[in-house]
Amino acid sequence: MLPHAPAWFRFHLPGATHLGAFEPGATAQDARWYDLGPQDVHALLAQGALRLQDLLARMRQGREMAAPSSFALPVPRPGKILCVAKNYVKHAREFGAEAPPEPIFFAKLPDTLRAHGEPVVIPHWLDSRVDHEAELGLVLGFSDPQQKGRKYVSALDGPLLVAGYTPMNDVTARTLQGTDRDQKYPWLRSKSFDTFCPTGPFVVPADAIDGNDLEVAMTVNGAVKQKARTSEMVFSIGKILEAIARCTTLRPGDLIATGTPEGVSAIAHGDSLTVTVEGLGTLRNPVLREAAPMVS
Image (cartoon, rainbow, N blue to C red):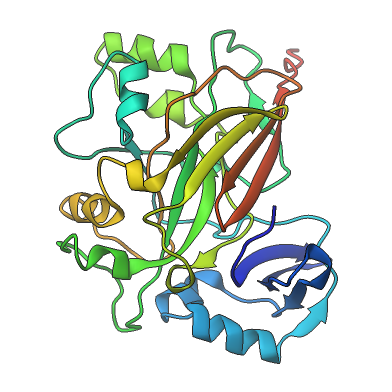
C-alpha cells in the first residue's frame, strides 16, 4: 500500500543515497515519483524543511523517476529512538496489566533500525519468543530553524515538533523481556537486538495528515494480527512529547514510536511482517534466524 498524501523517502543509487518524493494519483499507476538528489535529511529537518509545502516545491524542482526497487531508512542515525509502552488499554491487559497513569518510555539502540524490505534477524542463540509490534512513528523536525532542541513543551505545542509520520515495528524478545522484568533488570536488551526496529519506507508530512486517528495494522504471512486506531491511544501525541521532553531534549531527526495495539504474537524464521498505517503506506520485512557463527 502506498501513502494517500505526498510523502518523502530515501533510496540508494550507485555511490550515493538520494532523497525521493512520492505524489499519489487516482491509481498506483498514476502516482509520481521524484528524485530530489543527495540530501542531508537531518539538516532539512533542522531547517524546518520537508513540511508539506516545502516538499511540494521540491517535487517541482526534482527529476521524475520510476518507483525505486528498494528503499533506505528514511532517517539515518537518529539521535534518539524512544518508544512508549502500554499505550493501548487492550495491549496492556493482554499482559495482565492496566494502562499506566503517565507515559512509560524506553530506548532502542541505533543498530535496531532496519529499512523496508530488509530482514529482521533473530539471534542464533535466542530460542525463546520474539514478537512483532506495529506502531505509528513520529519523525521530529522543527518549523523554526533557530531551534536546535526543545525541552519542557506542553501537550498543546508538542505536535508542532512532529515533521512527519511513518510506520514502525518495535520487535521485542518477549520472553527475555519478562525474565529481565522479573529480575528487575531494564528492558534494553529485549528491545535492542540488531534489526529489531524496522522503519519506513515513507514519511508523510504531519501537516498533510491527522496522526490522531489513523488505523495501525499488522499482518503476519497475510493474517491480520493487530488492528486499532491511534485515537484509542491512552496518551495522545502531545502528551507523549510533553512527558518525554521533561526528561530529555527533543531534537530534529529523533524517532518516537507511540505504542502498539493488542494482538502481538510470536514470529519465526520465514515469516513476512507487514505494518500498514492508514495513509502512510506499508512497511514489509521478512524474518530470518541468524546462522550460528563459525568458531575456530
